[in-house]
Length: 154
Image (cartoon, rainbow, N blue to C red; front, side, top):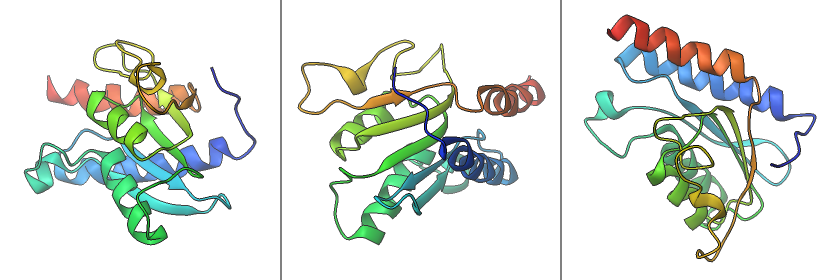
């Protein structure tokens, strides 16, 4: 498990603000930000599968895409991805393919998490890149947002 840094909680608060934006369209409230080499936010995203009718419109993918556009490159090898919920297999794969060296997550996802819960794609030795995972940053707040959302869906 990676080391929590001083600015991780502030970055997670930005990701939580993104997650809350997803609620307006009935999307699962997951938010993500990408921090550039200087620690500034260079990409933001929240789930928009319902809003965009797009199965790939996950918070992490959208944040990685924006960061790549802002930085003008697909290799995000000096960036940090911060996300409110442990990434799924698709998003974990995108994180590896973007060469992101560090992932900070809020709540673990025991049902579909691919960064240590169900699978550990980001640290699979068979891949050409591995990601440092820092879990549990503002975990209670991130988890509560998800739990409240699904309680209203049942």
